[in-house]
Length: 429
Ligand code: IMP
Image (cartoon, protein in one colour):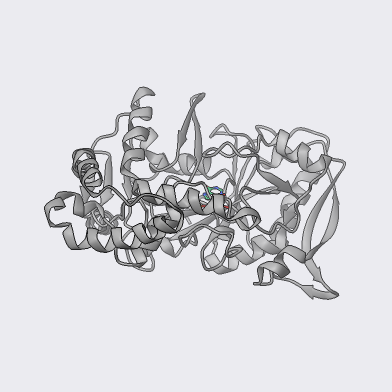
């Protein structure tokens, strides 16, 4: 297959950055197709650490990178992320980065609204990244968004701004906030337009032509399937579709665009933000997983909640996303545990579930049914072949494959890109 789509198969933070970087070396184009700067992708290249939130990971190696129409773009954040990378000697120019002309913009009042809602929600809050992602997507489907192409037509923005500000001023009034300063907004847009417009491009055409020439396109998902607005733990989800199919609609290629769907799966489970988490461990074991796995959010620095591997959830993610094969990450975090547990089903008031029930109250109440597997004392860190792995670690991987009904394509054993066991090359499949 010429194309590969990488998505998170849990609640995000599965270690996509490293895998995307590893694949990006062999890709001709890397494409982001959903989400915004709520993503946090950490790349370690030649010992140097790069943290990306919005830009496609391919940019660090100079691979042509594309921000698709399915992304919501904060232009001021874009400017700052470009500057941060420039300080690390990564040059970003229209030659190596294109932004879809139809990308909706995240504006300062989207960020305000995200924060205001979170602060007002008390216990029911979503635990968002407060970056305005949800409000920006609301305006997109509400047909009042300002898009990248509007930056070249600011003088014609009148009626669109009327509708946008009427909507937001009413919401702001409900929070006791002042109306939006229209003149200031227009001035800020005019200023940032000079930064964004040179990168604006019909990316659907770039990608279509690349595909016709047999180029390899790598689609880089953000967040994870359990945060998908349709298939995730609603309402504790993000505001975009994170499943692989979105690679097509979020970039402007046809339905076969995703190619090989590589689901990134952590060898245990983590979650940031609120919402149900059946295998969460609020004990010493959870703390140990968090410490060994350095489980702190890249974007917000929040401590991630940790728990055992939940095969029910990953099986469901693989099914709804059409995952072809998985990349299992952070196996080394499980080194040294005498026993490991894997969730194989749920019990809810005596009823057995082999999937996550859809209602949030049921999701919060299900009791995980575990099977226990003997652990291993040896280190798996840095392993590059099956022969480097202890027999018990291989048993754990095989059991995971069996339970999620999906084969392992890669195993990642450290943040370093070459510490990877390759079973099936997604680009060759
Ligand atoms: P939002 O995407 O900022 O609206 O946040 C909605 C939910 O998605 C919250 O639970 C966030 O913690 C979660 N979330 C958003 N982006 C990421 C990510 O890149 N990794 C993990 N969780 C994320």
